[in-house]
Length: 363
Image 1 (cartoon, one colour):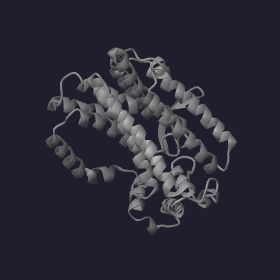
Image 2 (cartoon, helix red, strand yellow; image 1 turned 120 degrees about the horizontal axis):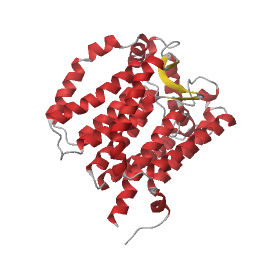
Image 3 (tube, helix red, strand yellow; image 1 turned 90 degrees about the vertical axis):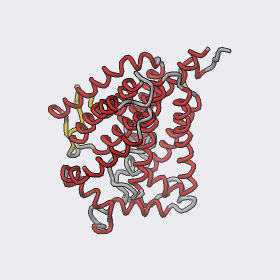
Image 4 (spheres, rainbow, N blue to C red; image 1 turned 120 degrees about the vertical axis):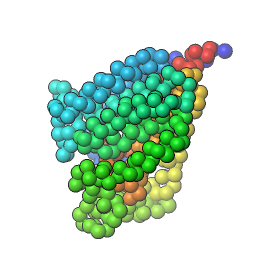
């Protein structure tokens, strides 16, 4: 029997869409408080969300077969833009990450968050899993080049997200555990080399993570204040608009990177559990879409997209609570920021395209 209705006609997965909207609405509530009731910021966030939703709807209309057809070109274009950043990129906050076209400025690294899992999914879907050693090595080339280019900017947080999205596709394709163990040994043995290549401020972030109390009024100040805000929320929180750490301006970047600390202080443990439950619902829906995908390309790509979303959440919550070094990754759909929201929504559009076109094919 042919399925009809709102979701099918617009190629929108309704459960996933509801989860996205609920998270976005929570984002408005927290952002209004974190920004000291800055209406202009809320308006700008509304514009970002509206454009991001249009992007999601547009991507959702693209059949998976067409997505696979443009995957290689999308990757090569994104890679070319990353190379252009090395020579012509605009600098901000000590990092050369942006390309400017007239009044428009964007980060090519955001495109690579989608382009890498797309091209790896395409390449690995050409043969039945598990992938051969030759294909695994080729995937590593696809992965390492953009990761190094992004790390060079420097932007270790985004480089990590790109790497995870690629490895997630490789893992779900059935890579040998022996190869995984070999990669782990190589990664651990290369740690001293990576440390020597890191910038001084990056090394300082790692040292601060290990012992923030060694410089409580300097490099450790932000993470200490963030942990105080999280702990002071208690079970039920201090109430909306009543957070002292944020409103007395103890918290840094409270509208972006550290917005989770604002949420914890105002809504407490109960609020955090509800927020995490909604995130888990979205992740579970993404994994369900992967399992229901008709073709290997769709299965692999959807896992890469949802793995990237999961890492966004885990790293932001981890760094704000002092469990991970601060790397400047926003809390998805909650933090203020237009570029990351566009990427996340485009990823959700891919998931919806994979799922809704699957249903059309089965009718």
